[in-house]
Image (cartoon, rainbow, N blue to C red; front, side, top):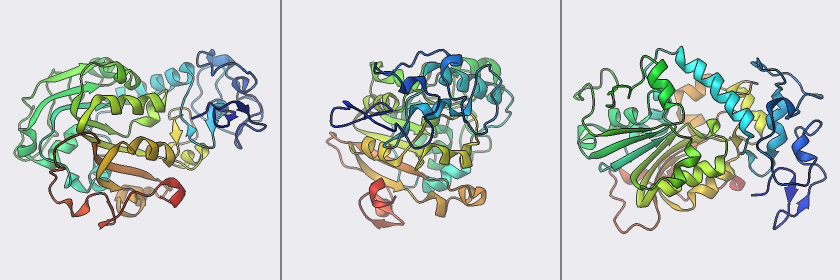
Length: 347
């Protein structure tokens, strides 16, 4: 993948027009040096001829700053540290005021069809970008105690974890144990498997020494600084033959995300479907729902053209069978076995 503004087999050719969305005030596009992710916030540009935007309390902020880092091939996949840090600070304030117990759980239940295609043995589990509550609780709530009893350990890899423990009263892991979703029939108040918290950015996962039987990443990539490094971390953390439980949205072009996310700086990473297609090539699909806009009630109700993948897959290189129940939906679209289409084929 070439840096914004470059193309060619070896990314050696500077594009005449770096992207079709915004180039008027982009210092990063006016240099022949490597991509600089350490530009100070007030020097990021994006102020000239920029239309609209909100929530820019920090001096020098502009909606168009993130568009300077966009590419027609992959959208906005890498952000300078200043933009990522500002988005994290704003998100932290939002979560600190939140008294809920989950984030769009019903959407995920419907997107994954209640995890009916999930194998029952999950082993050592790691969840990236869990937020204060974790999506893995929803997985367990729908999977039943047979699956819970086959979880060996649970690791949280979340940059804001320490802050959530300190500031979010309903944080699900603040006691050192993972709290079950309230009202889950037959489940204990807290799960007995060991729970470990690592308060680090997801991109740092590729340097983590351990590999896991199950890797969970649900609705995370919009919050990272470098989407490619983040996906590389998910891949590195998963054992050969290990399970991946993955969901994220994609966008045909960055500003298309405004319909879903608002015209603000809180979710600057907005990648195309081709990024996920590239990542998933090293996994064998057990389940993929790429038609959530048709079968997720919340998406239909919001009616803002949400698109994304809900994937359960095994990393290639393992020796065991898929061993998943109800696999009539394995690697299928609308229940009919079919290879996953690429973005070029109209996902």
